[in-house]
Amino acid sequence: MEALNANEQREFAAIMERRQMKDFMTMYSNLVQRCFDDCINDFTSKAVSSKEETCVSRCVDKSLKTSERLGQRFAEQNQAMMQGQMGGK
Image (tube, rainbow, N blue to C red; front, side, top):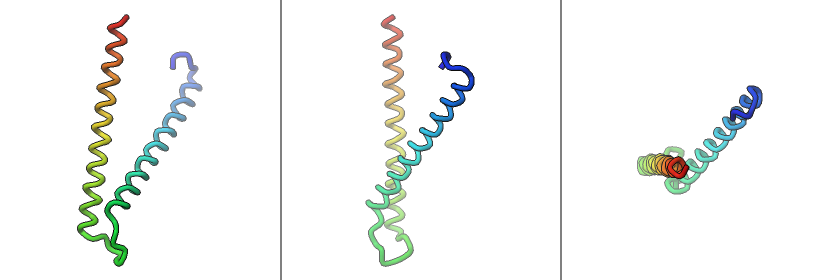
């Protein structure tokens, strides 16, 4: 990043922000689709049944916890890799 001038840094940051938003929206859309497909199966009523609501809640909770855990593991692996590179110098 130091090799970029101020304009290039702002442009790069804006590109990264758009990419992160796109990735978030894709993840959110996939989560909604997966939980809907798994949990909503009674189309005879407009209302969501309590069973379906509980299923969706559990589905979302499980997905978010899994995502959080994967993020933690990624951070741990990244930190270990960085420490390995620092120790190898």
